[in-house]
Amino acid sequence: MCSLPPNSSANGPKARTLACIPVLSSGILSTRAAVTYTMAVALSCEGLWKIYEMGDEKVQAVRGIDLEIISGEMVAIMGPSGCGKTTLLNILSGIDDPSAGQVMVAGKPLFGISDDERTDLRGKEMGFIFQKFHLLDVMNARENVEIPLLLLGLNPDEARTKSMLALEKVGLGDRSEHRPAELSGGQQQRVSIARAIVHNPSVILCDEPTGNLDSGTSEQVMDLLSDLNDAGSTLVIVTHDTEIAKRCSRVIKIFDGRITVEEE
Ligand code: ADP
Ligand code: MG
Image 1 (tube, protein in one colour):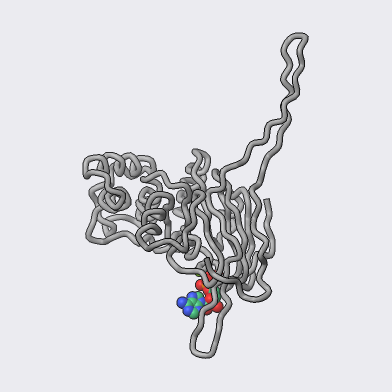
Image 2 (tube, rainbow, N blue to C red; image 1 turned 180 degrees about the horizontal axis):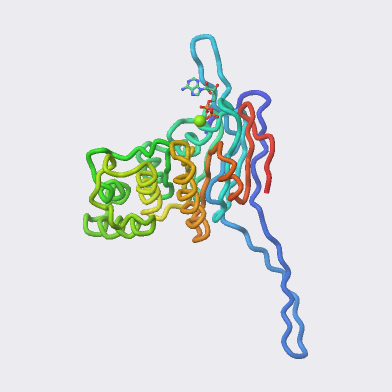
């Protein structure tokens, strides 16, 4: 879609392929077959830039980031305050527009499409977990979790059934009729996790999911995120929390809007 600022990298991520050569032997016959499995890319971005203009001042918050998240990965994005983590996550989420570059979600472009198409893509393929939960105060836990399903057009009965299953998965089946104000911080974050997983998205994006929680509660939330990943969910987690990073399959470090290190 957008043109690149000067000096930005035009090299995009390449699909990672896992080539494996199984040896098949049966009786006297031995066959070698070369099989190449291409792993599904859940989320990727290429040449991503974000430049905020404030009067004469320009802030280059994201400077040419290329990234590829494979389905089933749990990836931490870390870096000092102000390095561009939230800006990057907001663009990967389709909440904010990039100044240049593109994001692909489940093989489809997130930008350069109509607002309705983007809302549809985000609603189907993405789940979100925020530091401050962002639950609607006037709705109970079940109704909060139903929201993504109702936006996707499910009928109220289906939405209720799926929402209850998601709440049971996060251990809150018995709190479904409670409003956020009647729940602890950890319980509210678990409701927001249920809301993020209820529609079985391709990728779940989290911004400091334990940032507002005490250490004991953080650990419960981390256990839950790890369990989701073990069950196949793909997670991208912006965090300061080294305990979360330890549980991730990959840690991407950002400094001044650029990726500096990737650790497996
Ligand atoms: P982090 O999440 O790593 O702390 P941010 O992505 O919030 O970093 O911010 C990266 C840089 O972009 C900072 O210099 C910040 O001041 C600036 N920034 C973030 N949002 C805006 C905005 N809406 N307008 C102008 N500058 C912004
Ligand atoms: Mg931030």
